[in-house]
Image 1 (cartoon, rainbow, N blue to C red):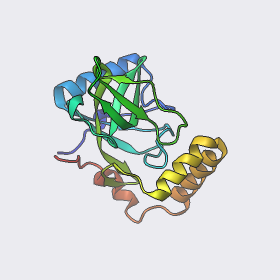
Image 2 (cartoon, helix red, strand yellow):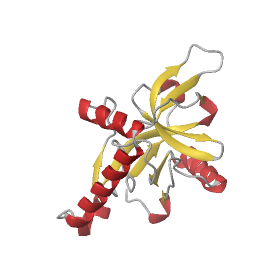
Image 3 (cartoon, one colour):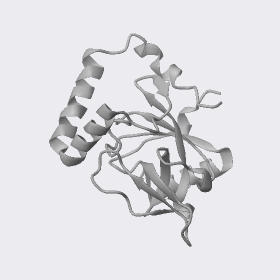
Image 4 (spheres, one colour):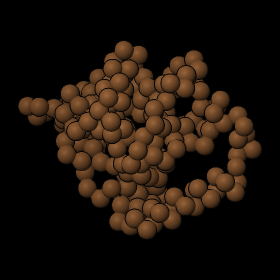
Length: 185
């Protein structure tokens, strides 16, 4: 099923979406159609998710969310996609404990009412892949470096930008089409 352009929403900064109207539209889209795709510009999930990547978000019952999955949630009229550290089911008010891979501290607990869905697919430079539930050693080290150094983040982003310009993919003309596939559809 091809993704229509209007289903892809742009993101900004570390929050995926900041505008309350867009957040409500995304939440309603997930409730009605069970998936949405978002373009990312934030850096809180480096090196797993890079600015410009397209995330496919799928609705999921929060009680079934597992540690390692990337959760989309709403907080103060902003959307975030961060890694789940724990699903605290035993508390009076169940919450998800989350953290951006390249931010130093965990997020405040995410109530089930703020959880919208999970990332099922990442489209990076025209190639789809599922998110890693257990990042490897290199990814964990890079994330730790990025969490401590905005200079390292800036250098990595510039190198990635240079790479995209200097070494375009051989299938660059067909890259958007290869991202039309939605995981599980």
